[in-house]
Image (cartoon, rainbow, N blue to C red; front, side, top):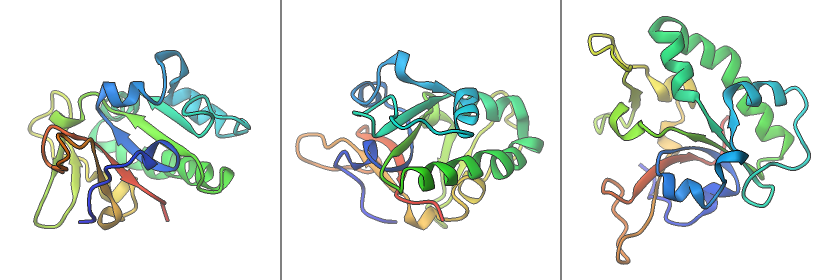
Length: 174
């Protein structure tokens, strides 16, 4: 696992999953966030300026709702066929110099990490008997080894598993 990210580089470039409302509020106001539908629509013709972080980022809400709506059988296919191409297009359009941030308010309860292999999975809402979604395999194309935990240092100390853990960041999707 790479060292945690204690700086604010995640607000300027890369792909992030963030669940801390306070940290997200420093990047974008509620009216600046895009829905998943807006992301997919705007990916056909990316805007010159992005709505957050002084034009360097976009915050997207609703990824978790899409996963739940698709369910275990269709979510992975949707991510690989629809979402990953949009994320790659975003990186290409902005030459890797902009941030795509997915707001996942329930991630701490639904995201699981396996320390044995470093993988991340997503637990389904209301479906405890269903196998979790292998998020790393389908969303990050297996690049989990390149993920960094976004942390807010508490009292000068960085604890990548403590309450200062606010998200996950991938500098570049390959």
